[in-house]
Each structure stands twice: as C-alpha cells, then as structure tokens.
Amino acid sequence: MIRSPLARVAFGAVVVAIAAFLLLPTIIIFPISFSAASDASQFPPATYSLKWYESVLLDPAWQSATITSFKTSCLTVIFSVVLGTSAALALFRSHFAGKAAVQALLLSPLVTPVIVLAIGMFMVFSSWRLVGTLVGLVAANTVLSIPFVVASVTATLHTLNPNLEFASAGLGAGPWRTFWRVTLPLIFPGVMAGAIFAFIASWDEVVVAIFLTTPSLRTLPVLIWSGVRGEISPAVAAVGSILIMISAIGMIAVYLITKGGSR
Amino acid sequence: MTPEGVAPTAATSTLELDDVSKSFGASPALREVSFRLERGEFLTLLGPSGSGKTTMLRVIAGFLKPDRGAVRLHGRDVSDLPPYRRNIGMVFQDYALFPHMTVAANVGFPLEARGIHGQRRKAMVKSMLAMVGLESFGHRFPHQLSGGQQQRVALARALVFNPEIVLLDEPLGALDKKLRGAMQLEILRVVKSLRATVISVTHDQEEALVMSDRIAIFSEGTLVQIGSPRQLYERPNTEFVADFIGESNLLRGQISANGTQRAIVADCWKAEMPPSFSDLHNFSSGSSVVLAVRPENIAVRPLAGDGEMPELRPNVCRAVVRDKIYLGVEFRLMAALPNDAIVQVRSRDLKGMDRFVRGSTIELSWKPEDAVVLRG
Image (cartoon, rainbow over all chains, first blue to last red; front, side, top):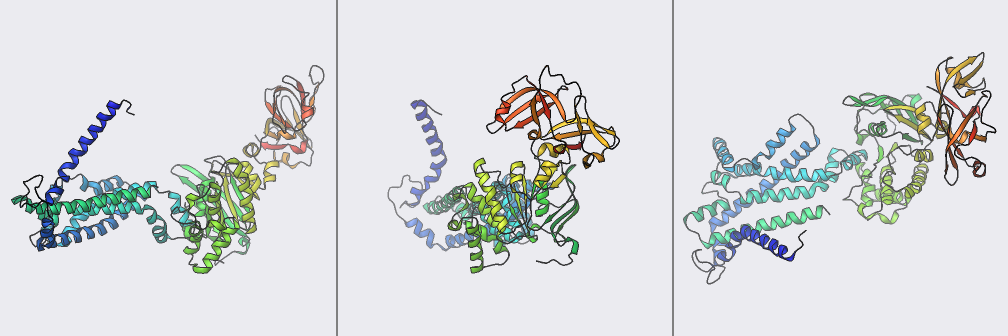
C-alpha cells in the first residue's frame, strides 16, 4: 500500500505518536507507583521501592474496597451473562414488530450519558433502599454491562450455521439439549468475551458507583477517586497499576478467546 | 415403535402425505401434495429450484408446519409433532456436522439424545462408522475430513438410530462431479443394506434416475407425477415431465377421429396410433395435443430427389438438417420441419450419420408405441 520508504517512515512515526498519546498517561503511573518518595509530584522518581504496594495491600480500607469491587464485578458478570445471552438468543431468533425498539432499549446504556443514568438510579434506588448495598451496585452494573454481552453474543450468533440447530433437533435432541450441547459450545467465545467486557466495565465503573456507595461500602475506583481529591499519593498509582493489569489481562483473554473461536 | 391407532390400510405405508399445502406469505410453496412411501423405498423429489421440493422435505422433517393437510408416519398424524419427536434422520446439503465434536461424538449424538450410553453407544457408533468406511476416523474433527468423508459422517449420523425415514437434502450438491458418481453408489449401498426408507431431494435428474425406486416430479409447488424412473421416462404425463426427465421433442397437433381410428394431425405430419392405444381415448376430436418423442426414438433416412413428399404418410416427416453435433458416443442432429419446428435426433449409428450434412433433406420416422400423447 505504501511504497516509498519515506512515506513508510512517516506513517510509522504517526502510528507511534498516536499510540504514545493514548498510552503514556496510563503507563506513567507504573514508575510513580514504585516511587520511594511520599508524593507523586516527582517524576521520574529518584529512588524506587515497593512500599506503596505494601501499604495498599495492608490497608483495611483498600482491602475492603477490593473485596467489594470483586464481589460486585463477579455477580455482575453472572447476571449480565445470563440475561444478556438469553436476550441475544431471543432477539436473534424472533421476528416481531418492535424488535428493533427492544434491541435499542437493551443497548441504550451504551449511549446514555452515565451521569444521567447515575442520577436516575440514585433516585430510584434511594426509594427502594438499595443505595449503599451490594444488591444496588450489582443491579446498576448489570444494566450497564448487558449491552456488552448482547453485542458480543449477537455477533457470534451471526456466524453460527443455522442448520446445526435444525440438525440437532432432527437427530432427536430437545431444545434444552440442543442449547447445552450445540448452541452454547459454539457461541461460547462470544459469551466469554461478553463476560470479560462485563467484568472490566463493572471493575472500572466509577460514576454510578459514586452515587450508590457509602463510606462503609466502597468500590476501588470510588476509593481512588476520594484518594486523589486531596493529594496525589503514589498509593493511588499502585492501585491504578493493579487495576490496569487486571483490565489488560482481561483484554488479552478476550483477544485469545475470539482468535481461538475464529480459527 | 408401534404408535397407537394404526389403521390397517395404512400399515404398509411408512409415510403418507395427505393434501399438504404450505405458503410463505402470499406465495404458495406446496399445493395439495399427496403421496405414500412404502417401507424400504428410495424416493427422490426432483424439480427445478423453487419447485417446493425442499419445502416438502422440511415439512416432513418437522421444521415447517403445513398450513393444511396431514403428514402421517405409520398412520399417525405427526403434523403437530416437533422434529425431535419424529425419529426422522436428515442429511443437510452442507452436512451440518457439529464442528466442536469428533466424528464419533457426531455419530453418537442421536444415540445420546435417546438415552443410549456407554458400551452400547460405542458399539453402535463403531459399527455405523465401519458401514461407511470410516472406522479409523472416530477421533477426528469434521474440519479434518474431506467433503466426501464429511458426507459419509452425516449419513452415518442420520442412520445410526435406525430412523423411520432418512431425508437427504441435495446430499451430493457440495461434491465435485467425479466424487458425486461414486457417492451415489456408496449411499445406495449403505441405505439398501440397512433397508432404510429414504427421501432425497435433488435437481440433478441423472442422480434421481440412478438412485431412486420412485421419483416425484415437482413444479411450482405441485406434485406433477410420481412413478418409477422408467415410467417417468417412457410415460410422462405432462409436457413438463417429458421435457424435464431426459429430452423430448414436443410436436403440436390436433386429434382427428375417423371411426375407431384416431390420429394426430399437424400441417406437415400426422401420427397414427393403433386402436388399442389408450392414450388417445382421453381426448375428443379436435382437441389440441402434444406428441412427445424422445430424440433417440427417431429414425433418420436420406430422402432422394428434390425432397418433395407427395402425400403425408403416418409417423413420418420430412425435414432439413440444421446442425450436426459429434458427441463421441453419438451424433446429435437438429432438423427443421417444414413448419420451422426443430426436432432433435440422437443416433449411435456414427457411420450412418456420415451421410448427412447441414442442408441435407431427410425423412424422420418414429414407431407409434414410442410416442406419448399429452394434453396441449
């Protein structure tokens, strides 16, 4: 496509510049998190240590926030995968007036401003006494995560040979057996990708969580947010590094699964 | 499997279709189709694309529900039964093998669905794979097999549970021509040795002639004619069948009655039939008919002189050679009648055909018993 060496070098430079622009602000927190100094203003740090990791891992506030985040994300994955996969299958198979509207409604959390959703949920959940509860957090994150599951499962359903389900029924398998033995194994890459996206989405979610959490029940991103409002401590960078690593592992897993699925 | 309430008369039919109709929106796909299938029979549904044959297969399998009419298995109406309760095996055009299962697991799947487990299932899968010549392929995955091997796995999977009927949807459509001939005989060997009852769908008339005990010809959703390959070839009941199975010269004329003697008359030929010939008695004098004669049933003779024929002799006709095509085993002549109708002749008398060139005047003739009279 690009023939002259000069053009190729220029193209490479632009790619590197864009990648640097996107990644540097994220990557910069890694050296800060290993700083031995007591604040994050010094860059690059003069001396390195693991003390911020130690303090984060031993601090009960960070510990309980980690546990809350982890519980929320895992439960969100379970609910959004079950509901999202069912919705994707039902929408894919059926043809009814208003199908497009239902589809749009399911995907709407992706395009609705999160702050609007957060305020709405806060008002409704307050009257249901769900603010500051795990149930409330899971319910909110499930709504936010379902679009990811629906989108990725629907994408794999389009690649599924429809004759396979006919064949299964023709060979004597009822709808239940056909789902577990044929449909689910074949759409599994899409379900897994949806699950990982759902996990990452709720693991990183901060806007809705700020409204729905209380000091006694906080998620990691909320605690980071309250941490950086006062001062930028390298402890926050350490937590941020851990979060990024978990998200990165998730993205790599999605890549490997979808690559394996398309083989 | 003996379903309750079997009528004695229907006991011999494995499958019975009674006035089955199916429409998609406003366009009818099947119009009042009825036929019966005997146990162990190989029936082919043959027709051009869009003739309703695949819809018919899907109705029998249970993937489509007929709008009207009944589908009976051993006399029991199964129209409302879902496919997984019908005990019918099906081979799809793309085979529809489960890509995430091994060959053995694919073949074992219908047994698994019937609660057959352990050693018994293993043994049944093994003997079925041996039947189709794939005994050492059980651990492979479908994508590791050739098209012909996948086809055999699909066949094994559709037969292993001893279904009432096996449905083949264009089973050889995805294979190249050479492999197709071998697979036709292979499929026939397997289904005949298992005494399976088979309905196959194809648009390939040669495949239908090779494999079938009976052929059902479909056109525009209607079952036009059903019968043995020979019946269809020698006694087609409509122009469509005469033209669809093999090739036919279709000559238009009128019935003329003269006492018990009946003839078909056109401007440049007439055909006489012996009085015993039943075809003609269905038509009244003056009605227009089509005389169908196969190209290989027309004899050719050179015509001496200027080619003028003084009087019209029965079953003989003057023509001029338009084209002569050499096809190895035979010659094909395209000859024009005086009324410009083109008649096709096929002959294996290669030496005899050397006498004719483009423009030769010839005399065509046929035996009355080789001609079929059809409604015009």
